Length: 360
Image (tube, rainbow, N blue to C red; front, side, top):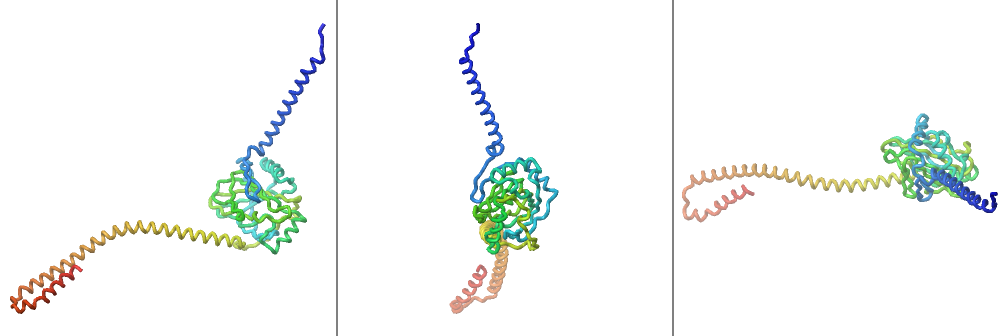
């Protein structure tokens, strides 16, 4: 008869159950890590100076970026210039359009990630904005929140944000990188940003007291080659309400500059003039020295040869003519007396002076 020991059978079963549980646990943990890796660990992250929170490189693939560009191309309109309700003067010559945040798989992925890094749901997002900069296009210095350099509008703007919400964060996504210049310039922190294709940059526009981070003032510098495409996402600290969005009052005066623009232009002009003068002076001195040495050597040799030949011919002709005249005169001379011989020095001296003049 087979003896069945319950104690002996329970232990192996328990061990098997524990091992199975551990295998299942680590399997799902690994799968979860893989999911997180697609958003974080496989993407290079960089931390910049405040107010730039971080930069996630190559978050979107080239294909995902191109899908967004293709979606925007057919709906572009000219960007509006003029004063906005945040106290900025928008001076730009770009083109732009808004797109839905679920229009492509790349945008859906981006939406989830922006929710995660900002802590705000997509109900706080403005419509995604795609901006296009062709050659010579730019966007002069401005802030994405209340302009701290405009004393007339700043306090009212802050009050409006406290009540209705405002652009707490700005997200910049580089949709391409194959253009020349066109960097985003942050003068207060002396930084420029031109990231890899598909990279995401997070910028904090105001602090917990709603005061604008002055370091967030920036410009999109002129593109000098190629086409620049970028995506902007503005995240509000309260649910986004289109009735309280930033309003731009059209102004045809596109050449109006802020004080910062004027200062920057002046400094750039001064620096460029100084550098240019120095370089030109150095180059001219070097080139002139080299050219003069070469030209002078060549010209001097040629001129000296010509002048010397001409002068020598002239002087020799004169000398010969003079000598002939003297010899001719001497033939007609009567042998001088002893008294005349004593008085002949002036005549000899005169003849010497005549010949000396020929070679002087």
